Picture 1 (cartoon, rainbow, N blue to C red):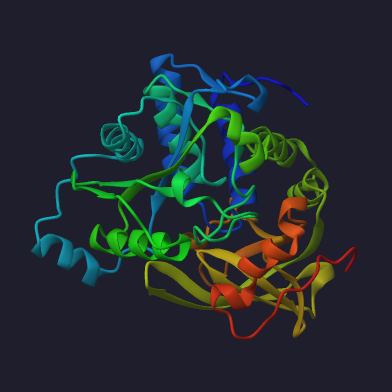
Picture 2 (tube, rainbow, N blue to C red):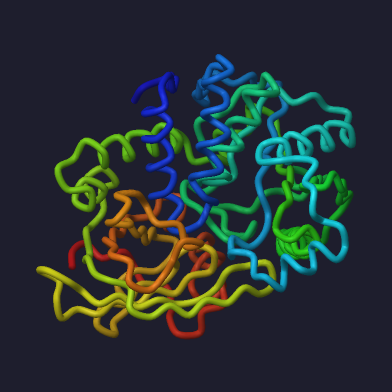
Length: 374
């Protein structure tokens, strides 16, 4: 295990973003956002260094800033409403929203942060969060609470304490600032955040889960950023991107095909829906279906459930040779399907109870153990 990861080139950034996209399982935000933020760091000469958990300040304070809201593309109706109320000229972009959320939380708590950690791997929740840390001169920790992208704050391997969750700060593209001083539970934290994100039309940063460095190890999945980098690099260097992704992640290449049916819904601060894939090549005759809530959570093959969250269902856009974000779903797109097993922390009874198809709102499937082969 490499103790220190430093990204020095745009290719290094691209490899990281590819890995983030794979672990993002359709969510985590667009790679374009993280690319712009991290490229800007390179161009400014800001070092992109990831700090191992062993090297954090045990008495320092560490916070988690992230974007909150649906990843659905904005409709014309939404754009018209934004214009009607004057949300036309953004005052803050990308990582500036996250920086605003961190600074708001520092002001509220009176604590100066030593570093931050990402909430999940993903184009924006990973890449932009990293850039925010570097531009504030803070450490960026090699770990996160889940090791993959998730739709809800409740989808963690163990419950965050109320003390760590509160207060929580919110900062949006137009400079609106809000702070939650107390909350009933993690479900309430998720609900309040989602409603505020809808008020911001999905352009809001949130910061919470402040803890001391000495507490990070027991609350974070370690080395998830460096793992993403290794997966992305393997995908680029492999002769077959789907097989390379499966091998690098310890997963299974399930199939390849073309998206033939896509039924999305933007509601409640989430991007929901299903899409169907008709197998091609050696997978001709197979039919696949995926249910998503921001991220992919249920995979059917020929009518049988073969994989569910918390295990990972990752799609690769075979036209772009890059992991597919669900905001870019469309009929006619050629894709590869790879599944990989959740971290050990997410195979406990508690984790499965709080992160399974039923808990996410899917009525068509129940948790299915990870298959050893297909």
